[in-house]
Length: 211
Image (cartoon, rainbow, N blue to C red; front, side):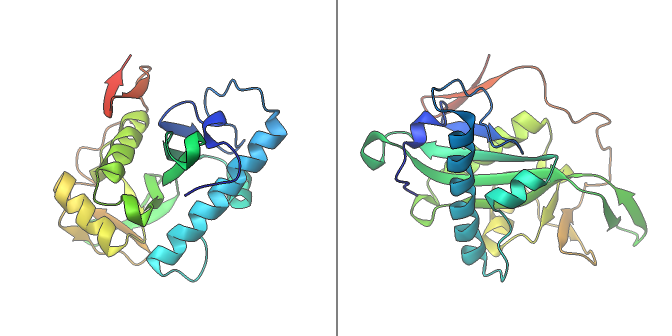
């Protein structure tokens, strides 16, 4: 997705992390923070709208305003730094965050939990089936220090269900009464600490490298 402003001035890496202050993690550019926040908000608005349309949802899940007003959420933004005449294009959005949920285990017993959740996941249609979604999702898992079996998925699309089956072998879901989906293994041997390691991850030549 192209924008009138230079996306590359906002995001120094192929995948960048944004939290509620709307300032990309590690940002050291020359733009003032107010302008950065406006441009990042515009990106979240546009990508959130495209995601909701692709999923056939009546309401938009992600927007700049909602994201800024909600603490504890993280957006991972994937860009193609060489497109749009060198200004860069945004091609993927993945939003996660911890939510307090009542979830049913395999025996039908309700448990109150605060799992890390996938709240929105969208890759521009023309970039799908090219490895972009896997790259973005793998980066998120590394930064969050978790595995998809331990995450609750908010209203996953059929495409996302197929994605999780193909790449992570997640097939058997546990029926819930809310919009979230959890898979077999979600309740078993949950790590006590799923926080990310202090290492940094960078995408170099299309591959994750840890430094």
